[in-house]
Each structure stands twice: as structure tokens, then as C-alpha cells.
Length: 406
Image (cartoon, rainbow, N blue to C red; front, side):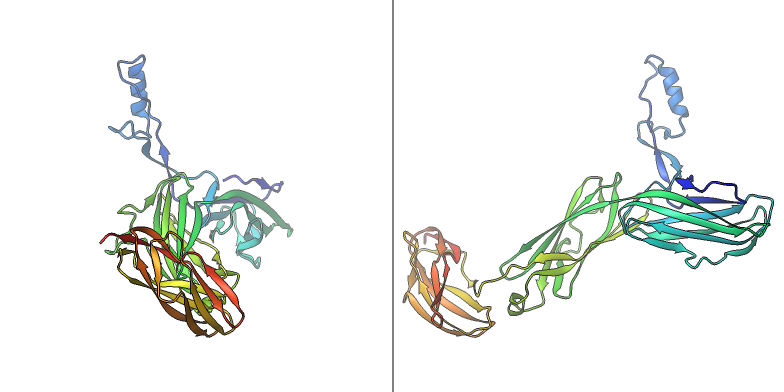
């Protein structure tokens, strides 16, 4: 494997670097010809002699011949970079105190891969002898990277000699991961992860899991009740294909505690593992996924009980939960406003006394409603007044209900 740059000069030692990786299949480009075509017999004969063509399967685009990489080439983020480094004494002299040191230079740091202290690997290296080592590193950064190999030794004249060689390679992104958050009224979070294969070959997805933060518990929604994956029997994602994964996160905190959390909240990390064509293992772990917490108002009203369907002239009950998210006591009254031309009417007094709601606490209120017309109707509107401060909170629509004929 040729280096991208090297120091000049003649040295007693030779450095060779070979990347350790699985071989690749040489694609076959068979000639489509018949013996009746012009020069058909020559073309068919040439095709049958092609070592990349599988006998009796001449139109198949892949053959049976494997090839090893001729350079460092490209490697994908999350894979393990492995190389064989060899130092050979090609001269006729014996050298002493041979030091082999390898480092990896990225855009942000330089990391020693072997012999960080620079100690001599052998005290004497005779002609024809060699030393070698295998270096491995899990790739965690994108972009161009540089493998730096440094060799030093003492020649027969007692002079210390040193040379350095550089090997460039690119780190590419194997997967494109996009996330979306959906939050329900009871603070449950649904996370959708869209994973796209950006490599030119299919990948076997071994594991895609969400490791939640201490604030949440997670439910994996990518499996059926029988335990089978929703992606059927095949776990291979083709190039440029996108798979969607869904997870449900439930907060461990109570709604009262959660209402006091401000800013952003870390929900966890995605852990993705896959295998490439020849079983090369790759792994990616995302950074902490964060969601912006929507700040609730002082008084939060949620529906605890509301039927989806009711027959006309059949009275039903609406149960509301009034949650005080502040550190002050509330004394509440509810004012029921009748919507014009609505098929629903309030039953009882239009102004009801709720009573005291303590700080970071809640109170359930039951309201009676009579449907008088069929159709889909908005339930509301209501106004809640804090008589201690004369502050009012308006809620134009609480929900919807379908009213049918008896």
C-alpha cells in the first residue's frame, strides 16, 4: 500500500502497511451476445473465458472472484479500522533499537494507536528479519483522517535514523438518522426515528434500540404481540432505503413535577448495530436526543371523561381535571358559556363553585350536558375565574362528541 507522502532518503528499513478487511466481490460485466450475431462466436468464446463470469449463469452481475483492497480506501463511521504494519530490514546491515510508532490524526485530535511511549520494540534487527503489529481503532469521527507511521533506529555507524510515512483515508457516514417527537396531552412522548442506508450495499440491521435517560421509561413499538419484528423476516435495509422505528417514552416524574421542568429534556440515545456484506460489524450511538419542553400555563385543564358517541336527548357527564401548576393557592369558580346554535346545552347552574386548589395540585370537576341535536359538536366553552385575584382563564373548546339519533 503506497503512502500519500514520505520522507526522502535511503533507509535500511522498509515500512509496509496493509489494511485488514474482508474481501470484495468483483462485479461481472458479461457480454450479451449470441452465436448468430456479428462476431457472435468470438464474443461468446471471450465471455466463457472470463474468470469473473459464473458458468451457466452468464447474465448474473456478480462473479465468484474476490479481491483484496489495494489502498486504505474509505471506511464507514462506527466500523473498526484495522491495519497490519510491518517493518522489514532490506539492507545488509544489522540495526539496533528499532522503534515503530503509529498515530491517527483526525480533524480534532491525534491519538496514539501503538507504542505511545516510543520504547524500542527490538534491540537488534538482522538483515532479512522484520517486526510487525496489528492496530485497531473504532472510528468515531467523519471526514479525512491520517494514519501516521514513524520508524526510528540506530545504524551501524551509531547514528539515529528516522522516517515517517502518511496514509490518508476517508470516513463516510453509513446511516442518516432523523428523529421526530410527538407529545400527547398526558405527557407521553412518541419518538420516530427514520434511518436511511447511505452505503452502496445492503446492511443487516442487528439492533436498533433506544436507551432512555433516567427521566423516562421506554416501550419498543417495533415488535408485534407475538414478539416478531414489524420488518418481517428480512432485516436487510437496501441502499437508499429508509426504515422507520417508533418508541413510546413515559415520564417517571408526576405531572406536577414535570410541570416545573423548564428548557430542554434529554430523552435518551439511539444505539444502532449492523453487519455489512461480509459480516463486518458496525455500531453507532447517537448523542443525547433532546426535546423542548412546552411550558404549561398557570391552570391546566384536561379531559378525564368524555364519551365519543352519545344518543340525542341522553344526558352525559363531562369530567375535567383542573391542575394548579403555580406555588400559590387558587379559589376557582367555573362559568359555563352556551355556544350559539350548538347541539349541546349545559345542565344546572351556569356558574359553579369549584373551591380551593392547592399549589401543584389538582381537582376533578363533574359537569352535566344534554345533547339536543345530532351531529359533531364542540364541548365548551368555559371560563374559570380565580376569585382571589379576579383572574380569568378562557377555554373555547374542551373536546368534541358525536351525537346520533336514538
